[in-house]
Image: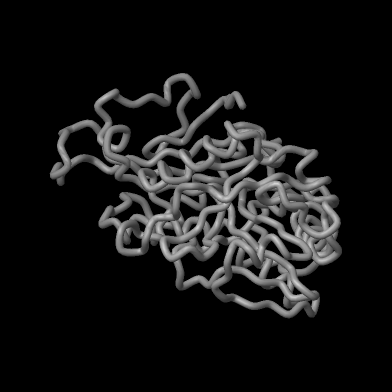
Length: 310
């Protein structure tokens, strides 16, 4: 997918897309010491544009930085305003935002302590992350041969640049084998999450997902789906579960900022349920998209409204 826009917010100012560059010795490029977020903006049926759970995403960016010991040289309010300004500068009534905080190129080596912390925010148009057909018919997943890193090996609650190598190699393995996404187990063999999404399965009308205290990232869309399920009166369980529970699930769906709510029709060449999106998945997905794109009045606190200039 080609990424193109007019402006990128870089260190406090909007610059031309082609001029938003860094040196090849940028510390984070070499060592992965940085944090980032993925955020979506939507245009609703009433014409209102809003950023979905913007405050929560910016809070998690700062939490991630605090976890690794990085101090972002802007306030949360600064970056909330910068996210909106970036969308407006690019004329985007809806789109995807990528804030990132990273170390500059002043020094190399693992012990470089005084490099400048830089911040950038890009925005572009991004459709269905796992494809329109995947959204409507469900995707095919593979249990990865790579485990999600242990909580004493990585900092699981931080959205940290270098940690995503674990996800990238799992994703590439799945794609090379002809699947759409990889499902990662933790080091004890329990299902953790996918390469960029949290995972839910449905059995006998109950929605089940891995517990927050495990190796998963605390997904903001995950939290939204949990709240939506409870709003709909669906029983939710957060507990450990195994791959064979997935094989016998009635339904499976993934969720994340990029993936939104995506059904799964197959895991390890085993059809899930009837091999198409199930009723509970469809119900949660419908409510989610009604909130972000439709006319559903529920959860107005999730929507940070903004207007395009002119």
